[in-house]
Image (cartoon, rainbow, N blue to C red):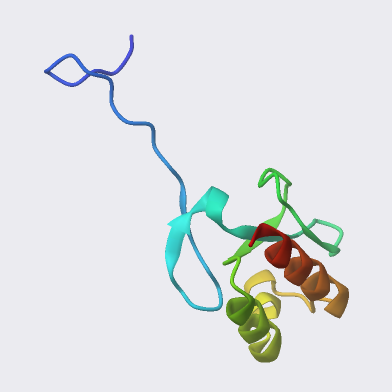
Amino acid sequence: MSEQSPSGSRKPRHVPVRTCVACRTSGQKRGLIRVVRLTDGSVLVDMSGKANGRGAYLCFELKCIQQARKQKKLDRGLKVTVPPSIYDEIEQIATNEE
């Protein structure tokens, strides 16, 4: 059966909310960049949001990315050392989004 409210209209679809590891603001999962640590310990940027592994999220803002790099926020969130190339890739993605 479909879930409907008493007035007969459909319930709005649930939108996943995630928090940026740098600025701690919450936003829709699709509005953030996901960085994931895979089971083999490698780290990659996951724009699909579906890769298996431990994930951490960043805003598309350069100041958040720079803060995360300086304070090693992704390292803590993923519990692994994140290579500088990942930060470069994230910055490139963020500048292309603007």
